[in-house]
Image (cartoon, rainbow, N blue to C red; front, side, top):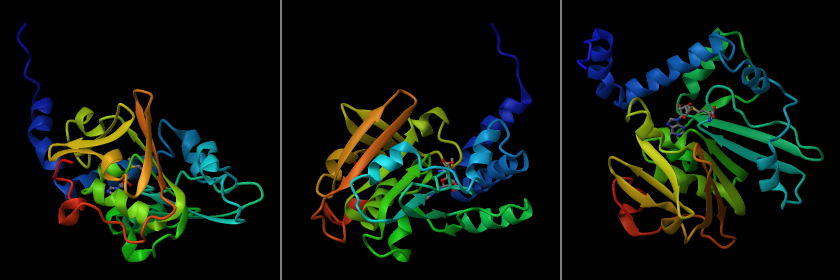
Length: 259
Ligand SMILES: C[S@@+](CC[C@H](N)C(=O)[O-])C[C@H]1O[C@@H](n2cnc3c(N)ncnc32)[C@H](O)[C@@H]1O
């Protein structure tokens, strides 16, 4: 059967490569969140309400990753938080400090102001790749990123930075859609894929493939699982890992090399 020519599809196909330019991708991301905020969560009104709830309990998965710590005061870093961090604010018997960072932090702050919203956690304008520019090593009891590191330019460097700012013996929690860039046809900020292969966390994209479980082994143990839709990885920084995390020489943080 002959395909009918659809002008809009043709335009969308033609401009798709343009969206993979980083500034265009960031602008599209911002536009998406503007839409979401204006529509008060759009199809996810409950999620919108929860993200503004100061009494929102910490998610069980986060709680479990902090359970080994006796300290009363705990610091959590949400990397690539979006305008309203989804990390819970309450854990009985503990005092939580949540810090949120995102490269669009400044624009999100402006957007929230326009929407008349005050976030529970202000968003610091910072990319995952630059965490150690702002935070000293071992500053946090838990570092998490959801649906964000596959939007970054250098995911491998981003994860190293996350391991750098988490305390030894503590956890980095990553949750991403399986093969997100592939299913989004490498449009906008979606340039990298995560997947779990034989229990190993694998990062791949047009620039190469990395077995993160192997590459990060000197720094952390990496547990990975997938339900087919999401890939979840729990990285435990070794107790004795050095404060400056480097392995593999000059190319260690390049995402364009296979490992
Ligand atoms: C799909 S949103 C997810 C937001 C939030 N984590 C959530 O689950 O709702 C992706 C976020 O990743 C951010 N991002 C893009 N590049 C990043 C980078 N290099 N480091 C940290 N975050 C990044 C984007 O600005 C955006 O806010």
